[in-house]
Image 1 (spheres, rainbow, N blue to C red):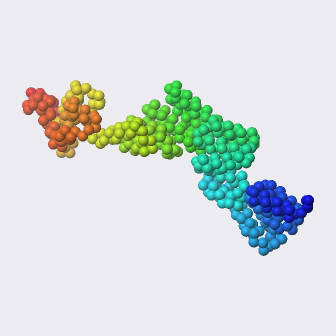
Image 2 (cartoon, one colour):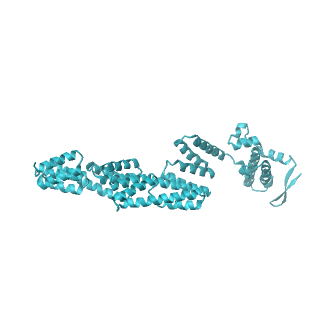
Length: 438
């Protein structure tokens, strides 16, 4: 009825703004000031729409025009400050994104979105940074909200794919990257992410195949190549480190396996499989305290019977490791026969007998006497089936009333070699001895 009335367009713009339809409102506000360049409210509404949509520079021009028309207009003054604040937040965010300070970028975008609630660009940048920080549900939520309003938004599709990619759902991620590239063939980030995702998936699968075929050397090389593809993919890289750790354990490179599993849990401190693998390597290298610590972590997270038993086994081995190793003292294997234990005792007892070292220094005599006593202790325990069983199972020998502190190694020696007069050491020259049996 009145197509040339600027205030009507201004009023409709205000209504659309209240409905959150800022892009449509912007068209009406612009039409209102085209019809009447002195329409202050029209300039204010145009500026507010520009600012809400994230175009702070255009907003500044609109608010400046309003101030030229009414330099005392408080709303124009405040909105002009708000627009400049958004420009500053954008600059800081751009610099911090280059520095990979993603937390600060999220902070800046949150502040900017207070003035520009309809800006998809700010929301996408925030979502991308949330994904880089591992806050995937939040990032997914932001991207999904945008896609509900605009299903063809390539940036939102890219962020959805990025979240899936970083959550090790690589196949689904590739689908979103491909979709983003259909919407925007020149989308550089989606192109790089898609390429990395495909390469990572292929290398990981090739490594798994080589492992299953028993080609551990090739599997190691493939997992190593996969780890070099994208250092930002924390979850997948944690699995790759753990897989490579498993390869190292198969190759009996246990220190390398422990290092790989450590790198895995540094990337993902909830990765149970890596803790279990590292704990087993600690057990194999007799680092029982470290093994107990890992099994405790696992059991606290997943209280299963299996994990409880693994923890108990590690605690038992730790307890056993703090005692004297009688097998090591005699120099025999844990599966040594009765005859092997006797032969070992004979050899070690003769080697460390105090009479053999009577001409040595006081310090050497004291050390040899200590070793002679330990050899006697070891033989006493390992030659008695009952005591040996208790020792092997980690039980306290003192419960049987055997106080090893009062142990007399000479009695064992005499009993073994046939009593007094049955054996002696005689010198055949300085520092030389020969054995004489009676």
